Image (tube, rainbow, N blue to C red; front, side, top):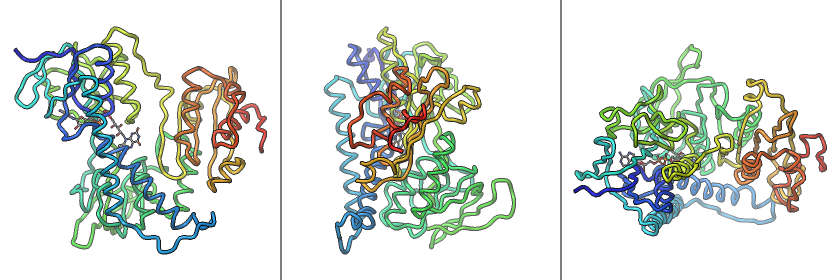
Length: 463
Ligand SMILES: Cc1cc2nc3c(=O)[nH]c(=O)nc-3n(C[C@H](O)[C@H](O)[C@H](O)COP(=O)(O)OP(=O)(O)OC[C@H]3O[C@@H](n4cnc5c(N)ncnc54)[C@H](O)[C@@H]3O)c2cc1C
């Protein structure tokens, strides 16, 4: 008799492992299939965590070289030990992935090691064994999107995975794609000494983010030394012993030119990972972009098969995957699991950081919703001055009639943390006045959020 579970989750990324833990908490017998040697998925192994480790280390290096002197801290002979930096990143990843193994043991989630394939509704095959489950959850995540003519070898032409592993600082790093991953990893290598050029097809960076914030981000990163080639497309890459030659054309067509790079980072986006899962054989429908099609309760068209995270529609973010994992486990337990997609923050971990939640001004205009905007700069905040980090602003958008908070867009020090307050405000249906009347500790960066909320009614105090 095959071993039988209430739930088998395929994929142990933040969507899958969190879904497995929550289902186990709710009393279900749960297994999670993972083919990687460690748990935690893209996020813990080759995504969020290693990139944030390198962003932190490279920022420390940059501060030691360029910012400490302003504080009267004089250092001489600051040097980079890239091998140590990479080893530390490995230690951070290792501690995190082991943490998930511990959580599986604690919650009695069985890790089925190997690639999972759905053989029929209720049956999953892993490493030659068949297991039964009342519910199957697809949480197989995503992978880097390829580009024709640009062949990845993870040494000269790399995806984010290779860009996190470089053993030498490249002389010239060309990043294809001005999205979040390209800008974060471009920042890492620029801080460590590389010349970095970002080539982007569109006329702006980070599509989907608030325009004003995107423009300010471009100016800020350009000041730091990143070079941008917007409205340009890469049509070919030739590898040689001394680097890669890229063919670049204007996006609208025109004369091609060649750009030489030591390393090329291909970061044009990510696509859902569904290969080898047996979805076509079982009849699970995909949408026009190859994502598993689900209803509002994460159910696919095949009864008993569900999907969450990067493999379905929506933002490709770890916390979105996690929240879907929790909601689905609760739905399977007969509870009312739910994800509020209007309150999912997005953060870019450059320095200064960028953070956003809810509607952008462009979206509100397109939807014909009347809104008021309140904006406050970090230059007028005492704590930001004390830190020496005064670049950027917080902008809060509220409904013109009801004052309900509809969105917030920020660029500045640690705004990835500040944004949580506005996610909570949106979740609670708070008004801008609610945020403005809440006492904020002084002196904190959070006071910029309060002042932006006051500015919605034109009554900011410190400007
Ligand atoms: C460089 C980088 C930086 C990022 N930074 C951030 C960030 O700062 N914040 C953020 O929110 N998001 C970030 N992301 C995105 C984030 O990593 C993803 O949104 C998140 O990991 C999606 O979670 P998931 O559980 O859906 O899938 P994944 O994390 O991709 O996990 C899927 C797992 O399924 C496994 N799998 C696939 N098929 C099978 C199979 N057939 N059998 C068994 N196992 C299988 C895979 O091996 C993988 O481990 C980053 C991504 C990258 C690449």
